[in-house]
Length: 491
Image (cartoon, rainbow, N blue to C red; front, side, top):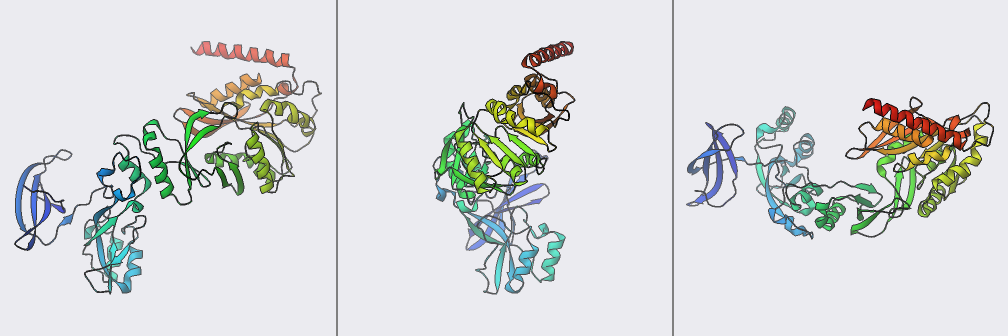
């Protein structure tokens, strides 16, 4: 029976797996081999044979999770960095200094790659003319592990493929964030190190089972991501007026004023008091690219300006609105920051008040022009419901002969199995006008399981703008009856 000690290696012979343990007998270094018969592939090993004999070399055991922290850290809630320190054995090549740089370059795929771990170390067993190149134990377990290209390079440099072994001290600083969290959090539970980066702020959305470890998680995220000096967690409390999520600081400073750059535009804002989602960068760019110089953009829910400011930089005229006073303040600030304040008129109104006020006043003149008019409505939780503000908006005016009708880009969430149809039907009900075959739908992103963010794009119907409220209400009733009839047929 082998008592104590960590297995140093293994070999196979005649369906036996030999596990080697180093021991010292009468001053000689020997290895005790414990054999375990392999029954069938995929089943446990059984059987037992023991022998003790001198051994020159064995094949080192290389576990898939070699960099797993010590088991004692499991359940830790207050970060103790020293508890993660451990020593592991890694393979290495003995390389003359004269060809060291060439060898390191040739072994990029096989050399060790860990945060803060050098690839080259002193060779204590040889003269100063040699160094040890540390190898990744998950890739290299024997000389045959090298690729043909690597083996040929080693031969050309007259470097032996014989493996040596180096005792490497690993600390908390050498581990990745996911490795630390996987070792600490309870086994069998989801481990996440994902976050949204907003300037110096890392924004997380922790689940209930992770909340016990929230401060440790925050510290790890801050330690492992250069430039992050504040980690916050979104709480399940929503400001009913401005739709902002409350958040708590998990680690670092409580400075919530962030500076970010998106698509070449710089923004500054208090992240705790306005809405900003870095995952919408591509969508912002997609819509802005539809705007041309001389166009006019009405941004109904403008936030801090991710649609308005880039469009203004392209030479468009912007009327941007947001109900949140903080968003309005930072919108004005960002217009000055990006030197487009002369092209952007900012408003602090409710969305419907903005549509029935500034938009209504400007639209008749713009519709007689030749430049395009865009209406952006990016408040996906509510924007579809705001479309009713366009009903009969210009019903007291004569429709122009050559109308230049606005293009609306309206966002909405959908949990329906057919999100395209769902958002079109909801937009149609709000407008009181059927949009089927009169619009296009763009998938923006999946925000949660079975919840998608969509964008409906359509030309605002002339009948909606210039019809009376009564006429539009009648059309809505007809639309709803038609929809109900179709649903009954389907049922």
